[in-house]
Amino acid sequence: MNTMMPQGTSIQQINECRQQAQQLMHQTQQGTQQYKQMMQQEQQNIQMLEQLLQRERQAVQYIQQSLQGHDQALRQCQQIIQTCNQIESQIGHQQTSMIHSYQPIHQPAQPSMINQMQHQMASQPQYQMSNMQQQ
Image 1 (cartoon, helix red, strand yellow):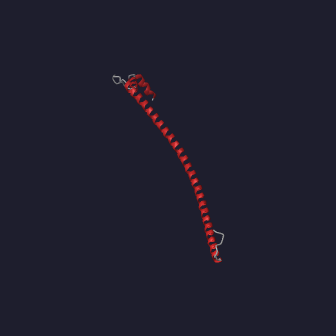
Image 2: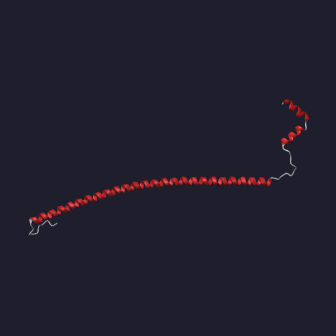
């Protein structure tokens, strides 16, 4: 603004100029306040985003730990399956070898041990009599 007054300027014009300058100054101050509020709001947004980002990082760490636990459980399951397969294979080989090593004996049917004992007792009359007397 030119501080020198041109010739022919009236006091009314000076007052109008001052009034316009005051309005502009007031609007500028309001604009400055609005910008400061916007800047403060953006700083709060940044803080909230940083907190959110920190929580997201923690969530990622938790998920990574969970995945490590799942990987460990997966390996343990695979080991159990492998052990079961090995045991099944060993049992299968044992059964196969037992089947191949089994040679049936072709002899007449033998009475069972109980039948043999009953037969022996029946053929000894003295034993039967003494056994009956005890009862």
